[in-house]
Image 1 (cartoon, rainbow, N blue to C red):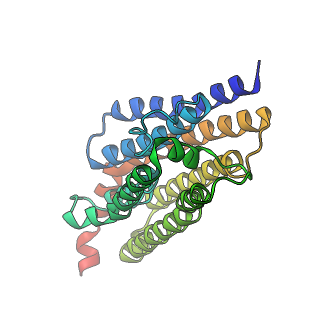
Image 2 (image 1 turned 60 degrees about the horizontal axis):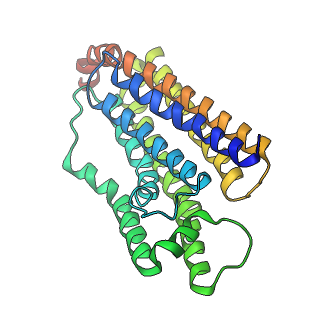
Image 3 (image 1 turned 180 degrees about the vertical axis):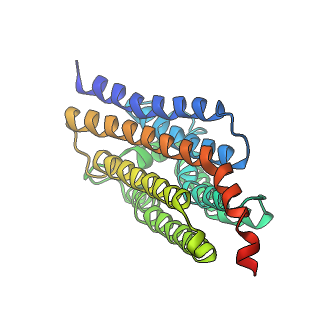
Length: 262
C-alpha cells in the first residue's frame, strides 16, 4: 500500500472519531448549553481533520469555500472551552451577549483568510495553505505561507494559552468561593477538565509533527493520527462524565449557598 493511501486512511481515524463523538454527545439524555458547546468543540475538530484530509486527496485547490472555515474554527476552540467550563460552574448558566466578544478573533481570522484568498487567487492560496515544506516559493506566495503558518501555529498557541489561563482563573475563583465545600465531585470535575486540556495538547503536538516538521514517513503519520483519534475519544469520555455529573454537582453546591452567603 502506497504512503499516500496510508496517509489518507490515517486522517480518516480522527475525522471519524470526531464525527462519532458528535453523534454520541447529541444522544446524551442530559440536555442544555453544556452539551451544545461540547458538540461544537468536536465539530471544530472534525473541520480540522476534514481540511487535512482534503490536502491529502489533493482537492485543496478546488474552490476553497470549505477550508476558509478551518482556521477560524480552530480559533473558536478556546472560547468554546471557556464558555463550556463556565456552564459547568454555574447552576443557572445563561449565554450572555458579552460571550460573543470571545469569537471576534475567530471572525477576524476568517476575514483575513477571505482577504488572502481574494488577493492571491485560488491557485496560489491553495499552495499557501497546503505547502509546509522547506522549499522556497515565489516572493509574495512565500510571505503568504509565513503569515498562514503563524496564524496556524504561534498565534494560535498563544490564543489557546490565554484561554487556558482564563479557565484556570475561573476554576480558582470557583474553588475559593466554595472553600471547604469544594468537595470530591468538584475536584473530579476539575480533573476531567485538566484531562481535556492534556488531550487537546496531545492532539496539537501530533498534528505539529505531521504538518510543520513535515515528516513524510507513513508510520509516523499513521501513528500520530491514530493517537489523535484516541485522544479525541479520551476528551469525549471526560466531557461526557462532566455533563453527567453536572446536575448532581449543582444540587450539592446549592445546598451550601446559604452557608456561604452568611
